[in-house]
Image (cartoon, rainbow, N blue to C red):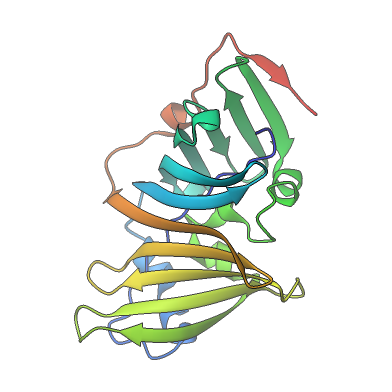
Length: 217
């Protein structure tokens, strides 16, 4: 699955009483200031080249550097594969071939097959959402335990592609994300084991097998 671009998801919001998408987004910067690093598990299902697949992966990220590392547990075809993404490029380690495929970030995003949403920026919401039109679709739950459902579409992009993100007021973190195109759900994923400031280093996130062959398609 050489064209698979994994999903890096980490929207951390700090709105005490958000009433619109803009109310939430205005507080993104302040909410991110104390987040030096974060990690979480992302699981669910996604439509890939071979059909609907179970997704199970772990994400580790350093938002200030737009750096993220993704380790796959499922689907089986991607098990033990690792992807490292930063502002410039995406490095995908393929376990079965012991190769590292290196691609510019814009090319990797285009070939992901999952719309125009740039997943590599999800660990830094202020940067990510600057290029998107975001609206609040709905709010559920009582005060202190509310969940906000946001929808984002790329400015000037295809109106057929959109991403929906659920944010819980209890801890102000994402709990679910959906990718849609032309009314079809491409992915439906749940976030769990969300942790921040656990001492992750850039060197550990970038580490890949030194014996692997470098491939630049």
